[in-house]
Image (cartoon, rainbow, N blue to C red; front, side):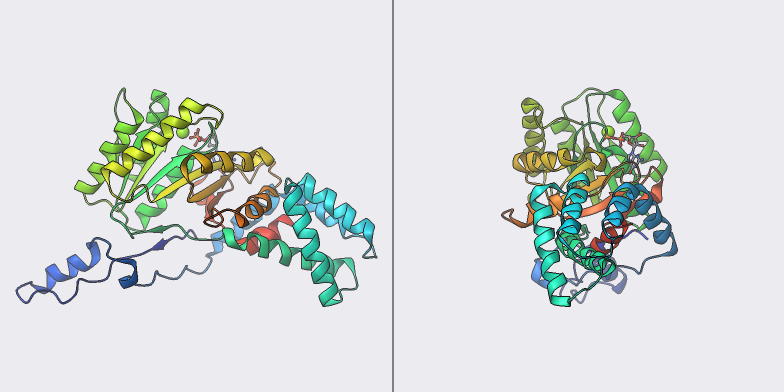
Amino acid sequence: MFSFFRKKAPPPPAAPEALPPATATAAATTAVAVAPAAEVAPAPVPAPAPERSGWLGRLAQGLRKTGSSLAQVFTGTKIDDALYEELESALLMADAGVAATEALLVDLKRRVKDSKAADPAAVKALLADAIAELLAPLERPLVIGEATPTVIMVVGVNGAGKTTSIGKLTRHLAESQAKVLLAAADTFRAAAREQLAVWAGRNQVEIVSQDSGDPAAVSFDAVQAGRARGCDVVIADTAGRLPTQLHLMEELKKIRRTIAKAQEGAPHEVLLVVDGNTGQNALAQVKAFDAALGLTGLVVTKLDGTAKGGVLAAIARWGAARPGGPVPVYFIGVGEKLEDLQTFSAREFAQALLG
Ligand SMILES: Nc1nc2c(ncn2[C@@H]2O[C@H](COP(=O)(O)OP(=O)(O)O)[C@@H](O)[C@H]2O)c(=O)[nH]1
Ligand SMILES: [Mg+2]
């Protein structure tokens, strides 16, 4: 089951006497966000539905290379230096990076000592705990409804899965009765606009698109339209680019600034979509896009393929030292089907990673 938090503004304080009850109710459900302190607590995440277990299987299947090389480490009978050395290599091979690998080893050794674990199988279980704890700060839901509309800007390199992820997210939002408007701010290719338009059509949501155009202008128009039409969410799809293409990064900054002009406080979310197969390069992308734009969340896609998965540990480790805290992983993608975009769970991911 897919989930995100939806915060609603509370009913307005004591409706004027003249206001008929029906109007008061409508105002309560569509009211614009008020000061956070007065907000109603978000709804709890629904319990995992059966489809979630199938999805977890796909994740474990996608990460099976890492799973089997990590499992191999624990097949011996002794907990010795050789075991830790093998584990170090397996974690590095899994794209966890040097810093996260070292942190995990230190943490694991402490856990082994504290628990007086006596056999490698017990160490494996402790490793799952260590990984889950390292990844836990990345587990946070996307919140919509604190602003109306909640404006989400989606960025990333070419082919990362931006448009596909937007399509899936839109579907889930629309199914939860959120009114969504898409902005086709990938103005480089006509095909990109068409691809987003297909998703808009499938989900029966509106789209703001221009034949030729400046992505900042399209985004501006979309946010204004979203405000005028009372949309809950506006999602801007941007063209893929490498962080080394400085003029294109400047363009993204301009889109961001322009969105802020259309609505104070927007964009509320700047999401980077990263392909899980890009290994340590994924961390480089996170750092570079964050430096340019200030990321608020990540979507890690294609964890169903040949991805090794350890890069999430590297992202978590880097995030722990980031001023402002880690960039959460809102969703992970494990395939091209609609149900293949799921919320991230640190514990589930740690288990999938260990096979
Ligand atoms: N296997 C797999 N393919 C994906 C996933 N997400 C996206 N794709 C595919 O990746 C390709 C590029 O996706 P697209 O959304 O166009 O990328 P964009 O350039 O970032 O907008 C498409 O063929 C998608 O179907 C995923 O989680 N798993
Ligand atoms: Mg695209």
